[in-house]
Amino acid sequence: MKSTFVSALSVFAAALLGAVSLLPLAACAKSNHESVRLRVELDRPVLSADRTERAVVKIALDGVRLARPEARPPVNLTLVIDRSGSMSGEKIQHAKAAAIEAVRRLGPDDVFALVTFDHEIETLVPATRVGDTRAIEARIRSIVARGNTAIYGGVTQGAAELRKHLEDRRYTQRLVLLSDGLANNGPSSPDDFARLGASLGREGISVSTVGLGLGYNEDLMTRLARRSDGNTYFVASSRDLAAIFTSELGDVLNVVARRVVVTVEFPAGVRPLAFVGREGAIRGQRAEFELNQLYGGQEKFALVEVEVTACRAGEEREMAAASVTFEDALTQRAATISARGAAKFSSVEKEVVVAANRQVQTDYAVNVTAEAKDHAVGLVDANRREEAAKHMRTRTAELEKIATVYANPAVREMTVANKKEADRLEREGLDNAQRKSYRADAAQAASQQAISPSSYTRP
Image (cartoon, rainbow, N blue to C red; front, side, top):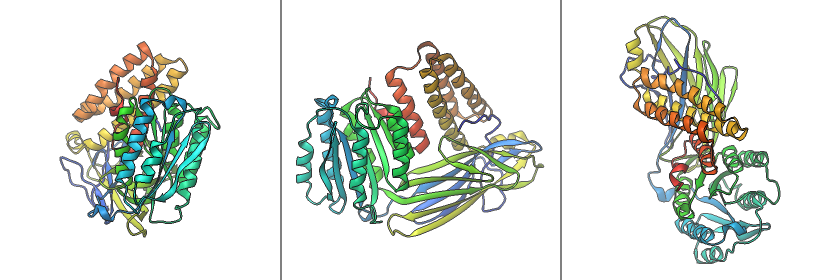
């Protein structure tokens, strides 16, 4: 997922297989559907002529907000809540209040289940249509903290409740896990949970994880969420749980597409090198990535670095052809949309700079920064914090060239912050809270999560 590119900010997609005129802002090739729009963009619509270039291709999916929210597809939601001894007191009280608020936002035709765990697993509310919420709320209020932490068993039992309605394609599936502790009963390694997340993702089940306080295993939680295409949150204070649950439910109640598969074909002369931030597969001239769900009012995208062979000034070239297949969440019907992107080549550097797509550059910088932080965690864990700081500075220097050449203030701001982070890494390494924030930031950038986990961390 790492990339080394500097001259890279290149390319952009405009017009269906057609020419791209010199514009002050990047244009893009679009393909629309009632619920999903597809865009192919590049970091520059104009590339420097007569030399091999590196560029960033952005494949973006926009979920269209539901015109009638009341007509949304029903939700199949399971909450899996840690009730181990470390959750006693204010934590469990705020968790119960947040769960009750989430239930009250559901409609009568939605399906809800509640699984709690300590060293034992208990299904307090089996999967059932919500209807009158009073009985469910009473069960939530009955939760008492005790015992150890069997996270793996809690998630697998929560998934079993979801499976009771998994075959009904009307439903949007989501499991939300809340825990403040280490997995000390049952499978407990990050690899165990990564495999579990991947398995659930293949079933169409997304797992969102909420890590509360400083005692949970962030590697375990983020890998479970990322491999299942769920969201991940780091919450320092239990007082913020209601806001987190509200944000998460806002996503679930606005799903417009499911089982999304994106395929990008690159023509001869445009070689895909690597995905930036998001996981995906590159096989020859084809790149692919998948999403379990796409939300209305939200953008999801993948960035692919490419190497472009030299072209003469005035020449135009297609850069990428994207195709997306998905299931419309409202109609349960399969749909396919496609879009293409092209670039023009110029020997006039000013034309290259003026045409730059600064939003794609910024997206790239966000993901490069997140990757650098994620890599730094492993280096600091290995007691190599000077190397971690050097890695952060190297990636930041690449972004600084982008900020300077293309006068991009957002990227400039990131480089200033990154330099300070590199200095602090070298002096101090990472404390527990900072390590969790780094992991959460990387997961957020990879999924383009609408709400920043770091904004819910308090001193």
